[in-house]
Length: 410
View 1 (tube, rainbow, N blue to C red):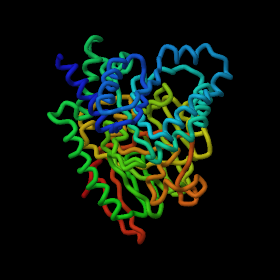
View 2: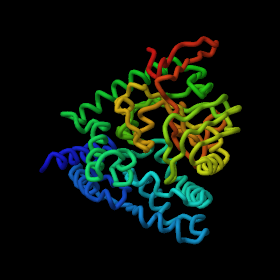
View 3: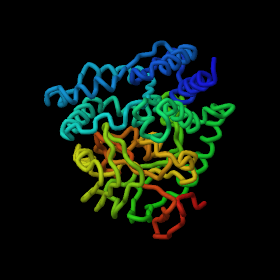
View 4: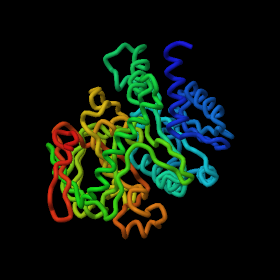
């Protein structure tokens, strides 16, 4: 086995042992592109060796995906195969684990009419809403990892010779996920402990609000009563730990739906629905997005905001220090999985019910009364930089420095 195969083998093992943490007798569902077949086979082998009952594949193909958007009639984007949605629900009900591999061209759908993109996203969101409730509430184990493809690698490393780009992106992924360390599993355990210390501090504080200040940003975000900060891994309904995102450097919670006011500016490109949205700004009043602008991808951003009522509000507030390893690499990955872990970020749309006490047992109506947003959308976007200061505001109005110059102030 050569050096690359050894690293890929370790990556597959990490995805199975730490990411979804496959248990004996469990089904693993993998969603990936055909270009990642070698990695998928390694993951499947590791899963069976860990005792998996079955490994179920959901394959994608970028060429076929683009072909449909270019050639299919409009009505094709207003429906989603209900048999497929029901199958995902059934596997979740039976306790399957779900692994998604991000491995498509970030610009795959550039030039497609935004109405087609929005219709497809909405129909899929509606059909998969029940299934998604299992992952959003951590009822099942789930994880997201990444694998390169040529188009993505060319965006990240445009100055390298073509034959070197995929190798360079693999190396960057291995570094970001700690696969290049002597004992990646132990490295992740230590990383989780570091995140736990931040989580414990923030949960003890129970700040009433956070105030963000940076060039182009002056934003206040209220937090709901009894909110819960989370960092790193989660625990499913059976008490099995898992790591939802690999990499992850964030601690996050849910904002109060109607408690966001001010303006915020993006600091990194957002890859959404096969398009890039760049240099955009959002203005909030009483939690709602009331104005927005974008240098690139304005119509795509508009369709995201207008997906449903809940997509006019925020569902996540996440803190990531500028000195995080991914940020210090000085790379833009053009992938939210990585770029959100280099920057403080927010999410448009649905909030995680686990971010409020008792939230996983509440109905959407009850969550709304507690100030927790619900939506078909959940899209993270990056706002952090080395110029960002954040204050924690207590219930009595007292302010404490939380971030200074983009990094933790405590």
